[in-house]
Length: 205
Image (cartoon, rainbow, N blue to C red; front, side, top):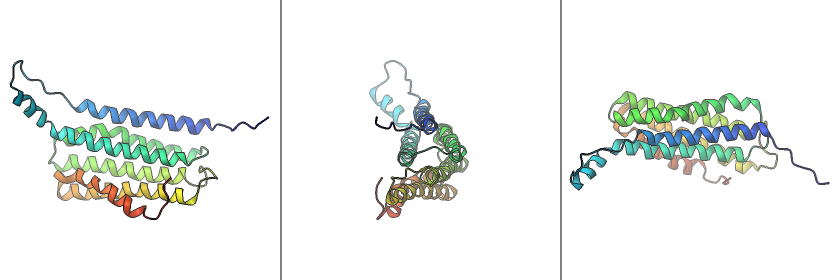
C-alpha cells in the first residue's frame, strides 16, 4: 500500500485564515468609494466632473489594492516553500494581518486629507509596520523550523529578498511623507525598483 502524505492541518488553517483576512481587507477598500449622486437631469459633464473629484479616493484605492496584493503574493510565495507548521510564526503572522486589516481605514483617512502630514505618516507607517512583520513571517516560513526540506536555497533567497524590497519601499514612502506628504504614496512605487535590485541573480520561486 502506498504511503499517504500527512497533511499539516495547523499550517493549512493558518494559511486559509490569512487568505481570508487579505481578501476581506482588499475588498473593504472599495467601501470608501462613494458613488456621486447628482439631481436627475444633470448634464453629462456634471457626472464626469463629480467622478473626477473622487480622484484622491480612487488613487488610494488602486495603490492600496496593489500593495495589499503584493503582500498577499509574498505571503503566498513564502508559504509555498513551507512544509510544516511551527507555533513561532503565529504571533508574527497575526501582527501582519493586524496591519493589513487596518489598511482600509488609513487609506480612507489619507484620501480625505491628501496633503496633510499626519494621515500620510499613518498610512506609510502602517505599510512599514506590515512590511516589517512580513519580513519576519517570510524568514520563519522559509527557515529551518518550517521550510520544506526539498526547497532550494535559491528559492529561499529570492522570496526573502522580495520581502525586503517591500520594507525598503515602505521606508522610502515614510521618508517622503515627512517632507512631501502629498507625494507619500509615490514612495511605494519604488517597491518594484528595490525588488529588481535585490533579486538580481536570485532564483524565482
